[in-house]
Image 1 (cartoon, one colour):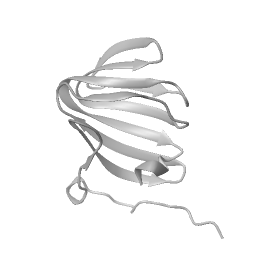
Image 2 (tube, one colour):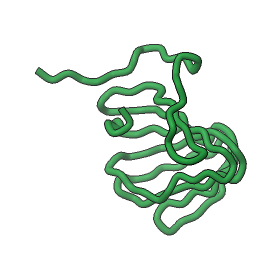
Image 3 (tube, helix red, strand yellow):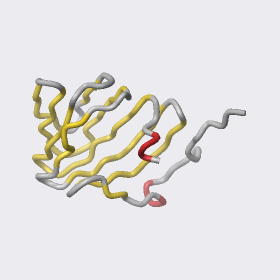
Image 4 (spheres, one colour):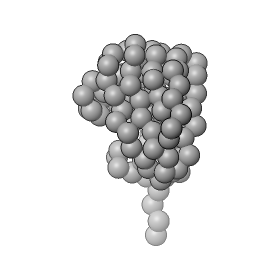
Length: 114
C-alpha cells in the first residue's frame, strides 16, 4: 500500500522552527505532499544559495529583500513581488543584496528537505 507524506492542513509560522540551510540562510518547511512543497527561506545580507541544480520544478516569490539571482547564464536583480521559474535540472543560485525572504515552491516535493 502507498502512503503519501503530507504536512498538517494548517501551519502557523509560530509553530515552525527555522532550520539551518547554509551560512546566513535558514528555512521553514511550510506545507507539502509528495507532489508539491512550499518553503520559506530567510537570507541575511551577503548570504548565498550556492549554485546547484535538482530534478524539481521550482517557482520562487520574493517576499522581501533584494537578491542577485541567476539561472544558467542569465542574471537578474529581483526584489519584493518578483517571481522566478526554474525548470528541472537548471543550474541556479542567489546572493542576497538586502536581507529578505524567498518563498520557494517545488514540484515534486523535496524529499531531501524532509
